[in-house]
Length: 301
Image 1 (spheres, rainbow, N blue to C red):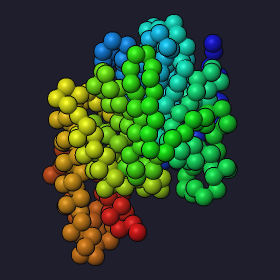
Image 2: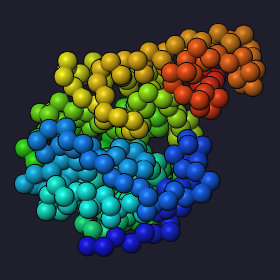
Image 3: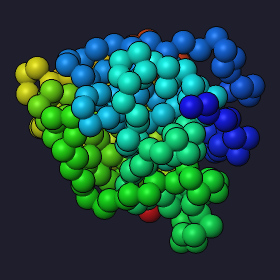
């Protein structure tokens, strides 16, 4: 099996919100330099780190079950990492949302026979020619890259001896986010509803919102037990402490910025006031972009 890098899929992956989110750069990454790092989370369950969104992987007798697939030029490296763990084919790819650093390999894995699954709004964002009610930065993806199974609220897989539940979390990072829970292993993949240790990107033009991100974090915290492990969309594997800190940071930023907005300050004036100065040393330097997205989220009707 040899994957072919489609110019269309690479263009989709490196366009739209990714350029603003910091995932994609002005120039394409050096794909040859990217290494896929595999970390075991339990029997048959792994997370793969590379370039883009973190990949969840379940392997076993039924075949490989993949959560997100990063960028098209990395598909062969990702497949090699999977083959090092199992000779079974990739049977399912579940997308946590539509952004290209999580769906860029869809075409390659779809052509190789994997069934692509996602929330219905993921298909809409990737297939605007069919769903004309969706506007924004979406770009038409090849048909083979589109989800062939979509869900509204949730869907359950009984696979590799596990119960795997994909649950929609409304209007968080986007309007099509899903968190994927491995019930037996006590592991949850949060996609980009959780950026571990850094300010998140909220894709307002794709239906994301600050309040939705706070709500999704609180929802996952309520689902967790003392040993639950979390796969964030970006960053290292985490637990309740890290997600609590992330949720509390979002609440703190909202509480810092909301009074400024209520006083009638413009977006530029809020940025100039540096409301996140106390948090920037902990959460990163991308504060201006994040502050602007918070202001827009709080003032959007």
